[in-house]
Image (cartoon, rainbow, N blue to C red; front, side, top):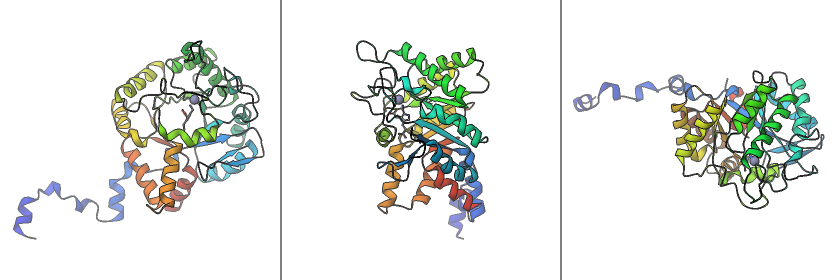
Length: 339
Ligand code: PBG
Ligand code: ZN
């Protein structure tokens, strides 16, 4: 070693000595590890109990009838799966102004919940709560006279739907509508029904209007018939509104927070986790991110597993506790093989 090297390099700046083998590298990255507890798996549930439908815009992801979902989840639970997020899809169910079928006895999620709880007692089940898959206009709330969202009617309805899912067995309700006051409205109704200690509220608190939801809207058949969601989902440029939305939802009693989509909003994730370290933080790797990463891997840009683990590790590093991802089945396989 030259004298010059010794002189110019401060001892604490010699980094390579801290990661020269695999174990040491593992120690440097322990806070970014992915275990089954760090994953939540979104599932689409359809009315036809014995059907499986592939989704062309999301290769490898399917919609399941309850009996087929049972078979699918059986293997995953054995592989370590701890939680799912259920989305209902209405095909023959009638769609109307107020999304009546979001919480009717015919709703696929309402029907599936008691079975899922019985089949998988150790699995934690969250339900997405929104009107868009069930309304004739495809918006996330009830529309008023002028065609814009009637906020107070909408959050009353969102709470009703949450209560129906809670009564059917959901342990977590997750409103994705982004309307003001929905968390408070849900919590109040849970308290009125004495369910506040057995049902958690996961708020899609920092949810941006995004180009990355396209494949999901195919999957859930929930595209707006006209217009867009820019007046209720956050403007992508606004970090300020994202922090205010998190503050609003915490104030109203949210148990868990979320940033969605995650890839283009990691600065928000970092800020929210630093500002509210008391709250477990969820991030949603949404449908467009799923499809984009898969397409890149198929084009030979990178190896799917290596790239995905790098991406997911970065979410953990930025503060994510739980990652909601359509890749969950693959990741469970990979992490099982690793240990
Ligand atoms: C419904 C909802 C959406 C997603 C989750 N819940 C779509 C939207 O808001 O338009 C997106 C999930 C994804 O893209 O994977 N409100
Ligand atoms: Zn919606």
